[in-house]
Amino acid sequence: MTAPLVIIGTGLAGYNLAREFRKHDSQTPLLLITADDGRSYSKPMLSTGFAMGKDANSLGMLDAGQMAIQLDAEIRTHTRVTRLDPDNRRVWIGNEPVPYRDLVLAWGAQPIHVPLAGDATDRVFSINDLLDYGRFREAAQGKRRVLILGTGLIGCEFANDLLQGGYEVDLVAPGEQVMPALLPAAVAAAVQDGLESLGARFHFGAVVERVDHVAEGLQAQLSSGKLLSCDLVVSAVGLRPRIELAVEAGLEAARGIVVDRYLRTSARHVYALGDCAEVDGLSLLYVMPLMSGVRALARTLAGSATAVSYGPMPVTVKTPVCPLVVSPPALGSEGGWAIEGEGRDITALFQAADGRLLGYALAGAAVQQRLMLNKQLPPVLAEVPQVLSLTPSN
Ligand SMILES: Cc1cc2nc3c(=O)[nH]c(=O)nc-3n(C[C@H](O)[C@H](O)[C@H](O)COP(=O)(O)OP(=O)(O)OC[C@H]3O[C@@H](n4cnc5c(N)ncnc54)[C@H](O)[C@@H]3O)c2cc1C
Image 1 (tube, rainbow, N blue to C red):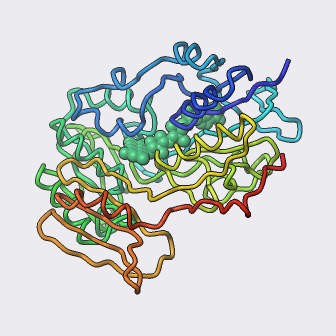
Image 2: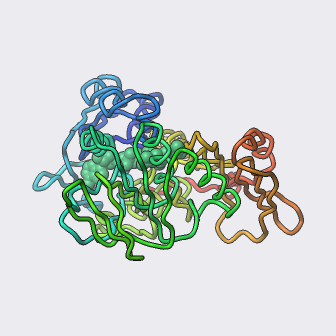
């Protein structure tokens, strides 16, 4: 019997790859392995649950059994892969070896945890999958005040959603603005203003040092000495691609698992896709690059080697109180921001010295310009010229 194509992970990367692969190949046995319950869901929806009136169960779509039928695949749920063994073309689940024809690592990224003192660290939630979200929603029932650690994209999205859901929200971050890695100050100010208009309270230039139980809920102590009362804490300080098992097995990794344009890792017959992968130097934890990877890799795995390329990749941030679309300039781009607009309607264009558009951030009514601006943006990962394209050697 031929060994299966094995995919580790049933997030958007794993399931979409399986679905796309089946369009090209209905024969090869397919095995998906996941540490969670294998329900299919769209992770971006997790930060819209309150506004949409959906809890974890209604955000889940098909369960693992239904997915197995749809994909003509075997799906092993609540099963953690513990070791890769590329020399022998197998992975290990504890003491059980599982052979593969090809292996795809689609095991995502994990939340970064900041060390916190105090006796209430069990009330600190990271929300990175549907099961996390279910636990959080249960804990939030009947509660009123949420403290969010981090004012990045995910912290701000949760803030907007919780405020819409009727919660009081405090946000704490060491920097001076929201989404410091993504936004110029003027656009960040527009988003902050929007969230404040819903009642958000920002505490910049500080980190949370401890969280303790007190008579009425919890008390958080900030590095500034300030004390904040809350009922539960959401930690949204960032995500880190999962690389440990890959590194242990000798695969090359940097921020993510290093892959080339064919999504090949440094080990033969092993590929990586989605949040865990660093594609040609780019570690982008978004759906659009993941879907480009899905289409290319499905073809490659079905026998027709296909390189991935990315066009412009604008990100829509789900802060409805201040709509926001951002296409950050490539790391190390030379140029500067030109800012126009007033109130929450801000156009920020990142331009090279010769006037070429390299990135943008649009807030409020300015988001309408995105389609026009997308046409001017350079691709994030240009197409591989045919003469340079290599056929995978493994
Ligand atoms: C709240 C939130 C909102 C977001 N909003 C947006 C948005 O609006 N737009 C956008 O583009 N992106 C957004 N993102 C990012 C986007 O959701 C991710 O880029 C994408 O879902 C990643 O999918 P993935 O399949 O690579 O990883 P994951 O969905 O994390 O899947 C990883 C899978 O691997 C499994 N796994 C991990 N380790 C093991 C192991 N050792 N053994 C077996 N299985 C394992 C897990 O159980 C899981 O099934 C958002 C993210 C969050 C958290």
